[in-house]
Structures are given as C-alpha cells and as structure tokens.
Length: 308
Image (cartoon, helix red, strand yellow):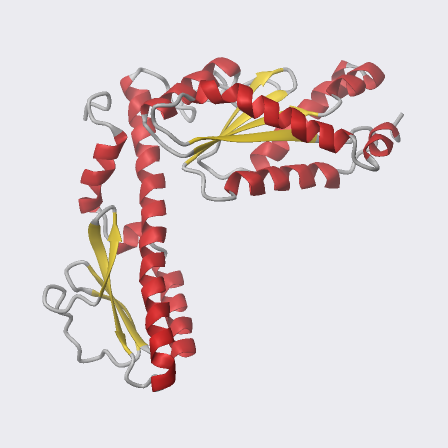
C-alpha cells in the first residue's frame, strides 16, 4: 500500500470491513458486563456479529434466530459500518421501568460503538505509522534498539523523536496531546551534588515517564532536562491523568539525595492541518505556568533542600 497516497482517514473508512467483534472487544469482559446489565434491568440480552452470528446471550434467546436485515435490533456501528447487533427482550421488565431501561440499552449500544471505534483507531494508527516508517526507510525501534534511544535515559533521542513526530503528522491523526515535561531544579542538584547525581535525576524522571505511559505514547528527550511526550488520539482527560500520575510518582520517590519533581504543560493538536512542532512553544508556556505553581507551593523548598 502506498501510504503517501492514501490518507489515514480514507484508510480507516475502508479497513473497518475486515474487522469483527473479537478484533475490537474483550469478549469475556463484554459478556460479564451484559450479565450485570441484565441483572440490573431485568432485560434479556443478545449480541450478534454483523451477519447475525450469536456472540453473547443472557436470558431468553435460546430459540431465537436473529434477522439482522428485517429486525436488526440496535445496531452497533464503527465508522459508519455495522459491526454488531444488540437485541433486548424487556417483557419481564415492570411497565413503569421499561422506558428507563430502553434508554439505558440505547446508551449501552452507543457505548459499544464508542469502545469499538477507539480500539479500531488505535490499532489502525499503529499499523499506519509502522507502514510509514517502512516506506520512509526508518528502522523500527524494536529492530534498532540503541540507535534511536538517548543513551542515558532509554527514551527516544531528539533526532529520532522529531522523525517520529513528523510521522504522526503525516498519518493525519487527531487529537494528539503534546506534553512538555521539565525537571524542576535540575541545576540545584547539579550544583550541590555534581554530574553523577544530576544524571541520575534525569534517568529517574525518564524511568517514571516510561513506567506510567501506555504502549502508544511517544517519549523523547529533547534537551538536557526536558522531555516531550506525545499521546496520539488522546482520550478526554488522558494526558492530564498521565501527568498527575507522573507527578505523584515523583513525590512518592524515596531517596537519600534526590527529590524528583517535574512541571508539565499540555496542549492539543486537534486539526490535521496543524503540525506538532507548532504546538511545542505552547506546551512550554503551559509548563512554565505549572512550574510557577509547583515551586511556590508550601513544602516544595523544604523537600528539595532537606538532602543538603
């Protein structure tokens, strides 16, 4: 496939045809959810594949033959294509509760569509970016480990990170969370404890960033004490949650010398016409706002200086 010729949006519209329920959902978890929903509402539930094959059945559907054309139930759609059908039998639900149960089932079908679409987008984006790397002759990090990594931290070095950043731009993926992570008072550690401890601080922060990330996050060390984290197709609150976990892990770190702390600035690329590079200054600005808050918070100086 010529990845330069086929935009990402066109790819995801076409490839959904090859996906089935087990590609998009953890069916065991979905079955447990259906059982719980049935127990709460009193409705019998049946989930089928797009052509009517039964996947999950809870309640009175033993002799039922789905007619996905004539009586399709509630359709579960991913990128405009029906991926599943949700049937419900509410005859045993009390009349006064039936309307509320029907609304709940409508919401469940909509939620299934949302879950399926998120899984599909993440999967296709990963495949697409890998294809772009091959097309452009860039070796994948798994086959070139060490060549693309910063020697001290193990995250991407600046040049490879910038290449990966451009690949995400070419893939026309949105939204992308762009996070500037800056180590607070790295110079203080260097001045008081020397190069070895200040390097250990950088490595400690990198380890925390890697520990808290998800597999599709892209992390680069772009300056001595500065990291950039990219979250392709970030969900609402995902970047904020990640930064919160990183900052809490820093506060929880116990060490005789180091008191790690970072400031984080988050911005979003929301338009495929935008470039991630153009968002970096805005992320830095937000980082400095966060740094001001952190360094002026009660107890910050005491924690930093108690090791000296």
